[in-house]
Length: 273
Image 1 (cartoon, rainbow, N blue to C red):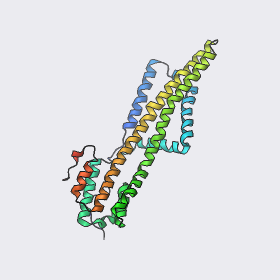
Image 2: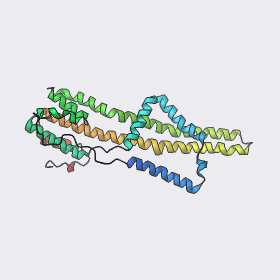
Image 3: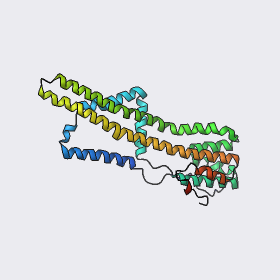
Image 4: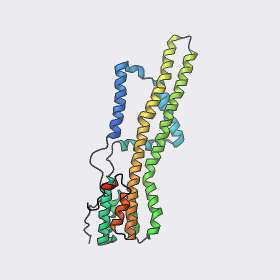
């Protein structure tokens, strides 16, 4: 017969609604640049197929050479998904839930969670740790197992961040190469005034495209991945502390101080809540 737990069946979910900060920032950046272009000149003068080919195609080619097409595609897919996904759970709410979990285990025993392990799947470090405790593994053996689970959780975000940061560094470099190509073409055709304009356009627009791609698109996406990895790491650390505390049979008061050290605003963790 299932034990009735005085806590929610699942860890706190992400707040409702989508995280539109990254998406809104990108739209604002490109919107402001587009408006400035439209107000100042003919927008068609900012479109050059050769410059786009050098910067976008060159950035993709170099990144694929370094990481492979699959890893690049996975990284872009993850970055786009994170830009419009539900936010992570509030760490304070998660800490309070873990304290509820600890009080329940102290009152009813660890076996009372056996029927609920599957509902903790969203927090793999916590789920694996509790499963190991239910299997009777000693607490001393948990650290490498939980660290392995934490690395598995963070690996996609850290890998995607590395790929996007490399692409962000490559884009301005490709813009500089395009500038040099344009200058060479311009100098080679000084006797033909009609050819100077297109060559100068390639020289200038490749620099513009490289800066835009690297600093206005790829770097913010990499930063978004980095922040998400940091938030996930904080929650995983809290889960690991809770598992060790439960395994040692500590009083939940000890867990309170340990969890408070992981919170961005520790004094918000009130044990009475």
